[in-house]
Image (cartoon, rainbow, N blue to C red; front, side):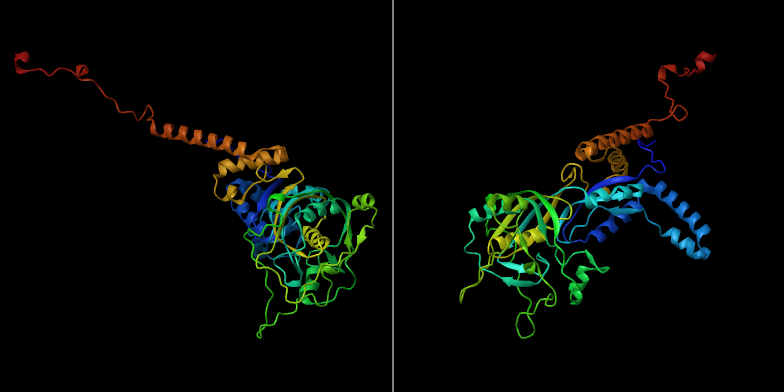
Amino acid sequence: MSIYRYTRGTMNGILAIEKPSGLSSSKFLDKLQSVFSNSVVFEKDLQAAKELKLSQLKSDTKWTEQRIANKVKNLKLKMGHGGTLDPLASGVMIVGLGSGTKKLQYYLTGCNKTYKTKALLGISTTTGDSEGEIITKNPVDHVTKEMVLNTAEKFVGDIKQTPPIFSALKMNGKPLYDYAREGIPLPKAIKPREVKVFGIDVHEEDSLSTDHEFVKLESQLDENGVPKEHQLANNPTLNDSPLYFSREYSEKSGTEEETKVIPKAFAEGEQLPEKLPMIHLTCDVSSGTYIRSLISDYGRALETSAYMVELIRSRQSAWELNKNVFKMEDFTDRDPRVWGPVLEKVFQDGDKVILEDLFKEYTEKVKSEDEAKEIEESTPSDETKDVTVSESELPKKRSIEDVE
């Protein structure tokens, strides 16, 4: 008998899972949904959902029986997320399952997040990261470590920020990134939003380092070897948005929140080095903060430009990497008898759990269960035991002389 019995309706709630870089949030969520929908852990929950859907379709639609059967057959677990991550980004993704999807609004709008990010100085791009096209190139030789360190405080506090056009925000019902990709001019300017930056830590040990793995972005060339015009020719870039410093810094320094810092230009014959200097930041921010925009503004504040090359969401609310955040491998590589009860414990206790401890506990329980089962199967029952009798207990063989 298993140490854990799944009961119908128990597997609903909130979990956090680590999204890898290189995969969109929607595709990652589809993969998780498929893993859960095909697992014995959710077998009864999925069956209950199918029975409910079958009842609803039979009473509320005029569909044919075959169409209803196909709809029910292809049904997957109800799932949603508490905030997307760009394909380039990795880290904490909050997932709601079943009735847990009703609790996602807080994670979408009301919680704080921590990001670890790396950026290269000297280039700005259409997207604000390494997946975009080059817009500008600016000198970097004037930037000192002291400048990088001192710039952080300019963005800490209540601050206005313009979201990038490559974002899912909608204008007149159309996502901004569609305007950008189709080359259609925006009907109006992107409105700056109020966000809060609680803190920016500059990793001084590799500040302005060129000893890193990131390759400098190169312009796309046409058939004649001439750099192509970037796709935002008809729309504003992050460089066109106002540059704001925080209210707290402006009050302290006696300057205006909206400022003008003109990036330096190359002298004749100057060009960027092959390895661009890197800045490495850890940022604690409110919901709604775009790190790509923050990086772009940081570069402009240094009188140059910058684009993001790495982004890790290490914390969202109280969910933290290496503490209470699952990896996909926990569900694909571990025994369901282990991750099933661990996941239910997370649904019950939320972000208070320590996953490493839970996995250790249930792995030991499953191991003990398997050992007990193995012993039970190898021990003969009373009905099947071989009866062995010692030689002294056998009747003695009588000789002819004894008979006579």
